[in-house]
Image 1 (tube, rainbow, N blue to C red):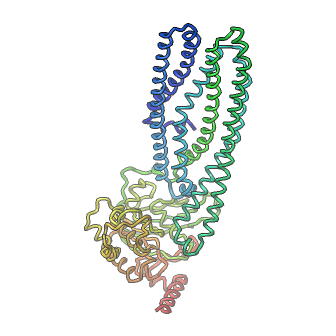
Image 2: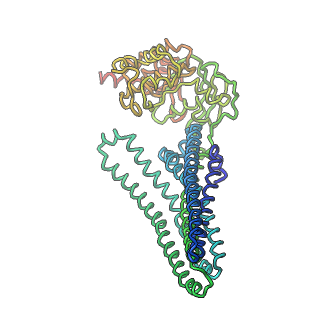
Image 3: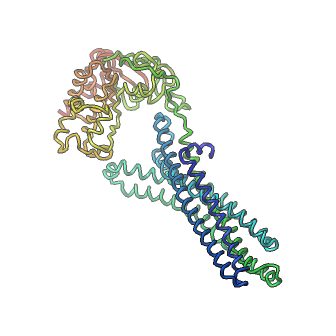
Length: 578
C-alpha cells in the first residue's frame, strides 16, 4: 500500500523529510533537558554555585526555545505535506474516475465514491500529518529515553521488563480487535451517504408520495448502524488510555519503592532519580503514542484500501488501439453483427446480431417497447459501452480506432435523463462549444425552440439554473439540452427520447430545424411516439434486443405488424384525447 500511495506525495517530499528531521530533533532536545536539570539538582544546588545554576538554567531555556521552534516547524511542515498529499489523492481519484466507462462506474455507488474522495482522503492526510510527528517522535523518545534510563540505573530499569511487555500485548490486542471494525465503519459511512444522496436528489418524489416518514426511518436505521459501529470501535480505542495510565503509574510507584533504598544507600543521587522518573514517563508515554499511531494506521489502512480500489480499477474502454490522427470524416454508422451484454457473466445478450447501416446525413428513428435495448444500441456509437462481438463503425472506421476525445467530439448525445449543471443558461450551453459566439448560441436555441422561453426570463441567458436545472420545467430542460447538443455541430446527433416532455407541435418544429440547420449531420431519434419519427429516412423497430423490422413509415405500415399496432393504438389514443 505504501508503495502504491507514495507517488502521490510528489511535490511534498522535501516537506516530509524536513518535518521528520524537525520532529526527531525536537525529541532529542526534550530528552536532554532532564539531564541538565539533574546537573543543577546534584551539582549546582549542593555546592551553592549560583553561577553554575544560572549557566545551566540559561542552557535549559535555550534548549526549550529550540525544541519549541522545532515543534512549531514540524507542525507546519507536516500540515503542509498532509494537505498536499490529500489533495493529490483526491485529484488522482477524480481524474481516474473521469476515465471510467459506464461499466466501471456501475461497480461503485455514487455515495461510496464521494466518501472515498472526501472522508477517506481526509483520514489519509491526517495519518500522514500525525505520522510525521508521532511516528518519528515516539520511537526516538522511546529508544533514547530507554537507553538514558538504563545508563542512570540498570537495577531500576528492570521494571521495564514487566511494563513494556504488558503495554505491547495491550497494543496488539486493541489493534487486532479494532482493525475490522474500522473497515466496517467506512462501509457504514457509505450507507448513510447513500441514503442522504438518494433522498436529496429525489426529494420531489419523496414529498409527492408523502414518504418522509419512511425515508426518515431508513436514514435512522443506517445512522444507528453507523453510531453503533463507531461506539464499538472507539470504545476499544478509549480503553487504551486508562489501561496505559494504570501501567504507567504502577511503574512509577515501583520505581519509587525500589529507588528510595538506592538513594539512602548512596548508590543513586536524588537528581538522577528525578531524571529517571522523567524518562520512565517518556518511555511509557511514547508507547502510548505508538498505540495511538497504530490505531490511526489501522483505520488509514482501511481507507487506503478503498482509495486503491478506485485507483486500481482499470477502465475497460481505452485508447490503446486508437490512432492519434484518426478524425471522424462523416456521420455514417455501421453495426456489423453486433452483440452486447452488460454483465460478462450473464448468459443472455442484451443486443443480439445487430446489423444496421446508416448513411451520413440521414435521419433514423428507433422505436420499441420498454426494455427493447434502444438506448443500449445508441450508447455503443460514442463507446460509452464496448460491443462484446461484432464491429461498430463511425465514418467508415471501427470506433476503437478513434481516441475517445475525437469520437465523442463528433457525436452529440442527449440522454433520457436530461442533465444541467449549476450556473447560468449560457454557461450550460457553452458545454457544446466553449468559444461559441452569441449569434451561434441564439441560433442553436432557436433550432431547439428554447429561445422563446429564454427571452421571457428576466435575466435571459444569464438566468441561474440552480443545481440540476431546478429552475426550469422538464420540457424546458429538454430543449436546453438539445440546444447544447446542436451547438456542438456534431457529425452524429443522438436524441434518446429527448422530446418526450414537449408538445407535438414543438417536437415537429425541432425536427424541421434539424432538417434545415443540420443537413449533413446524421440524426438518430429514439422515441415512444411514432409521430416523432414517421418522417425519418429509416425507422428501426426493436424488440427484446433485436431489430425486428426496418423501413420507412409507409413500408412498415405494410410489412410490420408491431409498428402498425403501435401506430394504430397511438392514433386511437390521440382521437380519444382530442
